[in-house]
Image 1 (cartoon, rainbow, N blue to C red):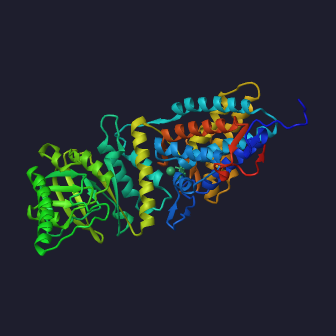
Image 2: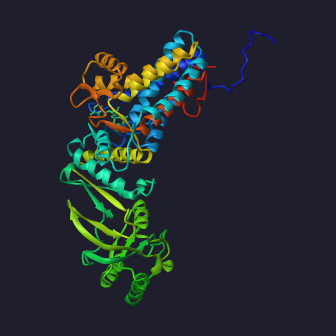
Image 3: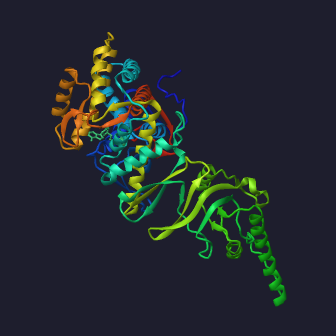
Length: 532
Ligand code: ADP
Ligand code: MG
């Protein structure tokens, strides 16, 4: 073949980036993601204000929320967002830590790539280090029991430190601990049993734990009873309305009698619906769809308490709590589909009423009613509560905790360096892995305006001297035994973060060829790519 003629194996308009360029570009993108969330790490971390395309504002410190709202496009950057999501699903907290670790692992790998160390060697070193790290973590964590209420509360407190809910930290941490313990069954914890409901008004400190389900709904008609004792509850996923025809159909009515009979017929149908509900012996109705005025009237006459347009997720929670079955056809409703609660009542909370369903058949149904002065405060409090719930649940499941403020990371790095002496170039990667771990206390310090070099030097000295729980206490700004100080986290945060961060770093490192069809989405490709 004529070697001057270019050979095309890919269609036109396909963008391709090869070798070192591809690596450099991917690593840069991943680092940018990590840099974005870096300033939010720890109790002195800053918040971000995110404004969506339609002007919705979110003010948060939560890693995964920031990254999800940013709608990141670069493929390698997206892989880091996935790390945050995995962390969120597995623990519910530690998302910033996981992303920072992944970014640091890649940043440090770049140094080795610059020294002409092959990516496979780095990947291997990282894998060895990650595996060993899991083993060491199990060994150096502290065992707790479900009875250690004080420690569990401290875990929730650590999760909430520095979030906007900080002033109500004590009280909310108690609520979190109590709630998780209450829903625990043997070793099983299903956080779905805890409903988070938000209501603007009062302060964050007025957040409360309610046994049962609280719905952001008033009864549909104020002439209905305000409460129902020993309530028999029907959950209906059907409209208690006469559906208006989808298309415009003309109904020709030529006399007043005809109109009357038409209206009478509608009324009969609605009355009939209420009849069916009455026959089931229900005293409370939660309807996922609408309830017509006429139906409301008949329900009221039967003394039934009813709410309309209840969210699907709430219907599911009500089913779980009261033992009711959601029915989608009224004909299917009978007494055995009903659920039970000893009291259903409307209580005015803030500006409007809410429906409280207490004394449920399932005593594990709980609601945390979150209060706060503005919507943004409430939303961020909710995220902090979710972190706390996830952490306390993780600690109760695994019964292992670690010292925070960078203590666990420094100890882990020290042991990796000491215990892993692989000969050859992988050792350099193991060193970089240990360095990446030490970036956590450094960033915690940096975000608090404390010199990171001083902090890491002192921490390493303390750890070398056998003080394995020495960490940066950001209440005082001093190095201290953070385990004793109650700055503690569940082990799971760290095992999960290290696992996903190292996996994604290895995966990105091993990519040396990026091929993308530009026709699909040109912005999805790293910029600066050459067309081939
Ligand atoms: P993430 O999304 O990773 O959970 P956070 O912003 O919640 O990020 O910060 C978690 C880090 O803050 C952990 O390393 C934890 O040990 C540390 N931390 C929490 N409270 C304190 C404290 N009082 N002093 C020092 N470090 C703390
Ligand atoms: Mg956190």
